[in-house]
Picture 1 (cartoon, helix red, strand yellow):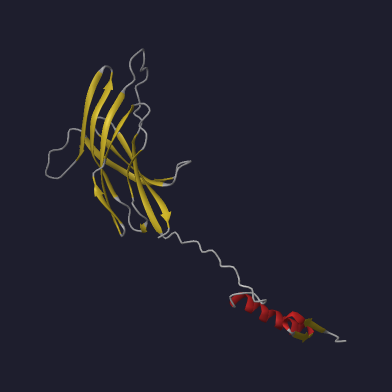
Picture 2 (picture 1 turned 45 degrees about the vertical axis):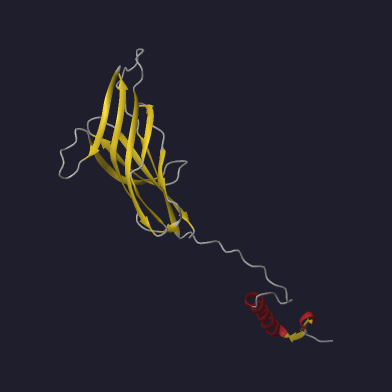
Length: 210
């Protein structure tokens, strides 16, 4: 009889005392961790590796904000409506995804409701992180129908060397806003001075794996 001994017949080892037991267990742990398999010769399952989301992907949408109506509007009069085309200038240059253009979308809506958001552009592929796309509202054209009259809208931004537009598009400040139920987006506005049309542009950012 072996007093104070610990047997490990499956490994062909016999150790005496707590120190020898601890030493043997430590060796087994090292083999199981770094040996590519466990101590019984079984192959350890491969660990799934999740790709790091080290890239980014942009999407640009725009809408026209509701226009407040005077109190007492009604009395059988038709609700004011608008049909407007809004043109953006978008410049985005990244490795694997480059774009420059002037996409246009048409919006038909009730002034008091505002328009739906429409997609103007999105990246064709995930690309390395870099600065945001450069975006400007460069033209707003169309008509507004109210009180039985049709008002023509022709708004442009100010440009050096040209006459000041009769209806000027002025850029607003930008901010990051998280809306309930939506992805966080960089949001900025542009408004017309004479016709009081407000355009809201949103740049959505999506993390992606390169």
